[in-house]
Length: 101
Image (tube, rainbow, N blue to C red; front, side):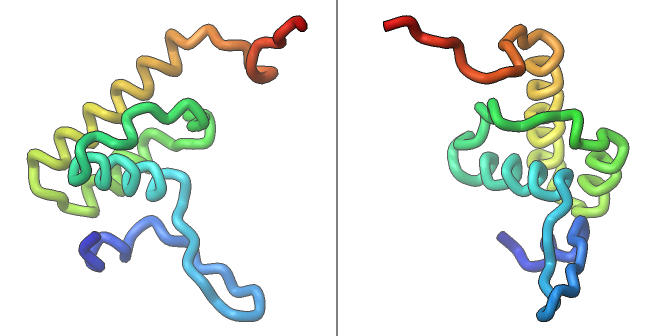
């Protein structure tokens, strides 16, 4: 990944030594970006809870990254698909179904 894409969406943590930690929005953008470059590897993200993603912040951060338009469009489509899946997903929140033996 181009280092210029590593400048936005990073929170700096000072705990002994300082280190950068991606925001939830940045981490999701990175997954989608890698997916556009590596054959759609991260299209199924069942562990993502969109409740922790601020949509406005996500779109603002995506704009700041200034990706080429085809990549930008694809990331927006991935995000829209994830939102649609979250709205229509009827899985129980408590975990996987119980199996009787």
